[in-house]
Length: 292
Image (cartoon, rainbow, N blue to C red; front, side, top):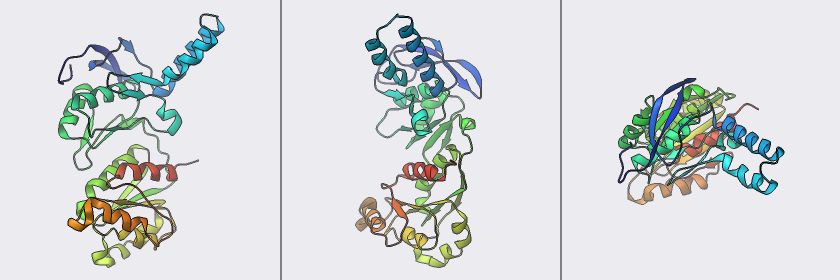
């Protein structure tokens, strides 16, 4: 039983890890004992086929069949409804944002996602979140710098056309950059990094011009005044995704100054995501870099 404020009913779930069924794991949830299929996509497909067969045989009405189909894509807990169809629609399973969730909640959601045979990615994870997940998913991996937890990375298929290059203005921006790197990597992209090349020493980023120009997509992470994405945007002909960070002194307003500076960039081709949102930048970069 995962630790929490109160006990819930539990069930045994056979978690598929690296293509084989692992030992049964107790997950706090209102559920039934079952051996789950290899992926969330196949699970939804199998459930829909069952519904259609029942309709074809006259076991259920058309109205009941239409009402039942949406439930094939959802997996409900007391405190969350897992979108098991996300991978089929968007190309990647649902990602867990740990912020605002208890370790017990994060672990239960993670267990359900992995039990569908899906890749697991958790962002903004504290160490106590990881330890709770580790009890459910033994092979879960924690990146303390990125604050991410991952599992089933072996299921990721290479799909990038080229390199996603992640650039930071300062060493203080690395945590956000690593969140982006973890996300882009687990989505099947080749990732490279250039750290601490901010505009206070402009020669540093200029010396990396060849690497900048060879990338398919560039994510630029910067705090303070947020000038680096404009500089990079003026050097390359590929998409630049700017990530403002909450790094800086008082008048930076926890990243608002960098955000506004990036939104007002005069360099063409620079787009901006929310403050400290390395995940969002990497998800967008992965879509841009995806093979068609």
